[in-house]
Image 1 (cartoon, rainbow, N blue to C red):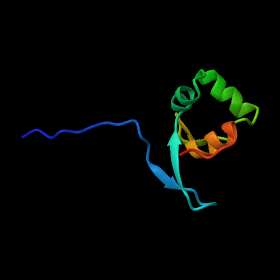
Image 2 (cartoon, rainbow, N blue to C red):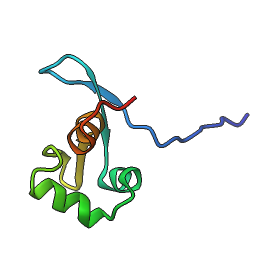
Image 3 (tube, helix red, strand yellow):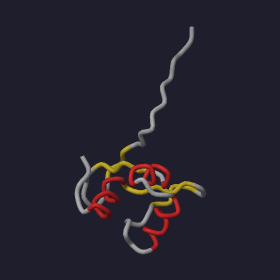
Length: 79
């Protein structure tokens, strides 16, 4: 018997303690693809406060709240 597993590029949602809403944690690669910019630009935007600060989930794992990032950059809520 073989078991099939499917992989998708979605990230787990965790509840934001402040607002109680679900967060979609995404990487710099994901944000760069979404905004059609380079990874360097994502980090530059973070440094100049155009993006919210990322959350460090591990030694080599940093993620942003997708909805907060879109809202801060574009000034609107994501769908």
